[in-house]
Image (cartoon, rainbow, N blue to C red; front, top):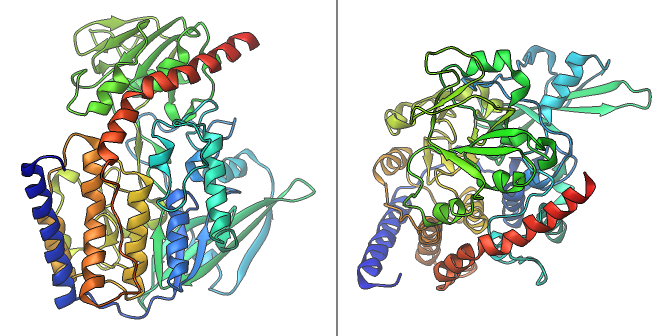
Length: 529
């Protein structure tokens, strides 16, 4: 913090965290039973660091990963995921007949044919991620790494998805995590048991030598669960007037950015994109024309957004938000009408870069849907083990991690604001310490009160915001360790003092550094077509 006013504000923020930590020491939440066996859902970046820190405090950990390797979002597949519902007014959840699943300790196995219905079901269990062929990070590799496990020195500042995947594979090997992971395993349902633990309904599908599919289903029980399945699995497409009818008439014209794989697939086409600068940059020189629809003012309070938008190629037409997929008279004839009244008539492809929703489908009956605008209402009355869910993240959580209605369920990488890997590493340490009795939560009623009332103001500057959000865990855990005379617990550190300044400089250089990547890739593409 650079000036005195900011110093005072930050100190006040830390004092508040210390008060919360002291309240937990004075009147702690008491778990019903010791936590020894833990399930982690997902072996992406944040599932891996959760497993590491839980393992370090002596927990018996199992990680369930539906892919064949670690890395989550960074595992590339040339095959795009299925097209999502247009619009995504709801996410279809697989119906599980629990009567068909044997009790814990037993397996259900059968052989399935390769009918279209079976193959569609299997594909839905493990859809490809949104990682596209030419993807590079838009976060400096230095800031993307775990605090004590840097990228190799030769790693470019903004590196490839191959480098990122290799990094997480090295991390998993370095900390002995691979033996903990059950690969190609889907978590179909998480059930709260009457004894106070959790039961997971699991499935695995393997192709046999005769080409048939072997289905294996079973149940396992755990004392606690970390949901680290992330927030970038289920595409979100808003319900815009006329869109459903447009999609019915021209289904091949509409896609979500998660399906994007190669820019040359759009050669000589007129592409309409709803936000998303990187894809527009990759289409430059290939698509016949590119139009971007942006919601809100072009210049935003977020400096990083402005840096990104400044890189939109000059050949791109910038339009305001789309009001309807119809002509001004309301007829769905292939036209698109914008907020300023302008109309686009010739469109070959529409790519929705509108982000993701998060249904947490494996929680099924434990989910309570709620409008985020009502956040905080009725948290104290939420049934045990139930999750109040907004569009993207759970709402009834303590510091975005611990489920208030039952903190033996925790969420990793489901924040209200974008956060970096170091933040989640510290969050994982908090989960491990609380579950192992090395740190304490306040009572459920106090957690409810804090969740409703603790609304710190975050600066528009993303790097300054990173420090404040991570400090929640740093100050809480360090304060309690000191008060409990736990010299064996290493003090946690926040970002280096130069983090904000260095981050801004690197962000400012993002356009220049990544332009070389785009030119190199574009040259290679043009030479091949």
